[in-house]
Length: 375
Image 1 (cartoon, rainbow, N blue to C red):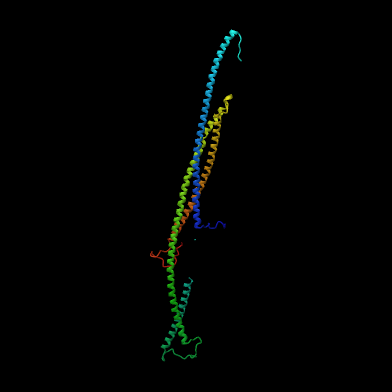
Image 2: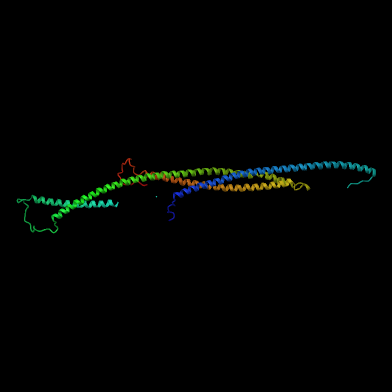
C-alpha cells in the first residue's frame, strides 16, 4: 500500500531532453532498418525473379537443344532404318534370287517585527489611558476642593488629616511619571510611524518582486510549453514516418509472399519435367545436359524460396519493431499532451487569480497576499 501512495519519479530537464532524443533516435533507427529491409527485399525479389526466369529460360533452351539432338538422331536412325529395310528387302530379293540359283543362303536409354511593534503600541496606549484616568479622578477631586468655601454645606473636621499616605509620590516623581509616559508614547508613536513606513516600503518592494517573479514564471511556463509542444510535434512527425514505414513494410511482406507463391509455377514445371524424363526408355534415360540443368533449376528455386522465406521472417520482425515504436511514440505523445494540459490549462488558469500587475485595475486588493493566489 505504501508503494501505491508514492509520488511518481522526478526527472531533470537534461534527462527529459535525452529521453525525447532517444525516442527520436529509436524511431528513426527502426524506420531506417525497416526501409533497408524493404529495399533489400525488393532487390532480392527482383534478383530471384530474374534468376528464376533465367533458369527456366536456360532449362528451356537446354531442353530445346536436347530435343533438337534427339530429333536429329531420330531422323538419322529413321533414315538408317529405312536404308536398312530397303537394303534388307534388296538382300531378301537377292537371297531369293541366289537361292533360286544356288538353292542355299542364310543371315544371322514544485514578521515577527510587526507583531512586537503592535504589542509595544498597546502597552504605551494602556499606560497613557491609565495615567489619563488617574488624572481625570485627581482633577475631579481638586475641582471639588476648589469649589469649597467657608459657607459650603459639606465641610467638616476629619481625623488624622496630617498623615502622609505611604503610596504617595513627590512632585518630582509625579512629573517624571507623566513626562515618561508622554515621552514613551511619542517615542513609540514615532517608532510605529517609522515601522509602518518601512513595512509599506517592504510590501511595495515585495509586491514588485512578486510581480517580477510572476512574469519570470509566466515566461518560463510559455517557454516550457514551446519546448514541450515542439517535442510533441517532433514525436508526431516521427510517428507519421513510422506509420508510413509500417504501410511500406506490410506492402513488402505482401510482395515477398507473392514472390514465394510465384516460385511454385517454375518449381512445379521443373519437377514435372524431371518426373516425366524418368520415363525415357532404356539408354535414353541418360544424365544429359538438360537433366543436370533441370536439377540445378530445382536447387536454385529451393534456395531462392529459402532466401525469400528468411527475408519474409525478417520483414515480420521489422514490422513488429515498427509497431512497438508506434506504441512507444503514441504513449510519449500522450504524456506530452497531458503535460501541456497541466501547464497550459490547469496551472496557467490558476495563475490568473494572482493580483493585477502595476498599472492594472486594483479593485478588491489593497496590498498583501491574495488568498486566491495559488500558483
